Image 1 (cartoon, rainbow, N blue to C red):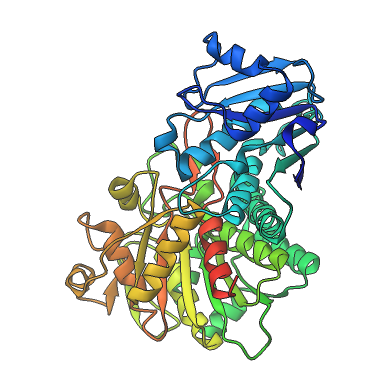
Image 2 (image 1 turned 180 degrees about the vertical axis):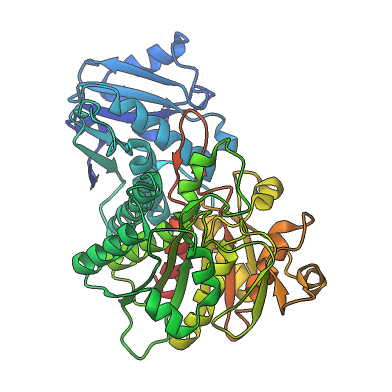
Length: 493
């Protein structure tokens, strides 16, 4: 889909469809009012007759409105004007894009960026418009033999009061972030017989070629030489060889300390010997969504040409049962030298991440952020709305929370107090990989913190936000917007 900006008066726009807003009070938004004047009251009469009440989510499509140049006019309900904010703006854009895509229009113009959103400027509105529009138009049909008919809609413009740097910058950022999200969603939605650790490594190499990134892929022998005993313990039950992917984007020069993003890359999680229940186990293909979001964020950063250095680390493996698989009670030595008693092989994400966190030290990072579909406990705590956020520095936690709020990809901070460390003590090793049912997401983060004490570190538990279940099952692309917005801030943009 081609996105662009237009600084034309609505009544002069020639397009297959133009979308304008109507509030619940039946007051026409400015662009709708301009169309109405050109149409000599046609829109106002339509609304007054009760055919459009302006409630949030309502749409009405009008054909060949007199005296207008566009073929169709889509009226989009905005809800109560006093309650219109960031969520309502995003919802209105999604509603409009979905409705326009179902028409026969080949091109469209959305006049929603004109709407006032408290605390948000035009750059934000354009960025969000592009992201939400791309989300609404996303399809995944790579594994289907018959594809849906191609949409007629080919281009979409966003009308702005006047062309300028802010509008163009916001649109460019939104396009880049949306592309990163689409990549993360594509990788997450692929089945695990296709998206293996080897496939992820090949995808990283493709990204490196396309965006001129540095790339290195460590094999099992490299991990053995480095002493990554925890990662290799998870990989023992699988016939798929593990990969450790290192991807580098240098936007600030070689001397600048990087932000390191670490993504959990379990391409399928059976639970290992501690086998998961059969119900919904197919969704464990999404256990590599942390890795997918890191790759998507690197792609977005490269397209935006951010003035920041970023290193992406992806420990990738399957977690399978088998004759060689790690067993509950086994003790392994991590790259840091600390020993771990593996009480539950289904708590494998923290095992591959801990070696990656130790590996991250060599980059002398300004910050390290790991991203993982780590615990079901986080879903119980926060549901499917907020990502769980943990950090060993208040300033980093606040920066990430603010980035999530700005991106509308929100995270909520949970405690990382020393009191919880008591739960992961082991009589046979330095640390146990589980701490029991109470505060499961917290004790998982406490485990990771043992390997991240040499730098500013944050952990994002995306178990509740990386994908949705049910009829519209699929990866969401989160937290690419949060991470990309964080990097925008670090780059000074």
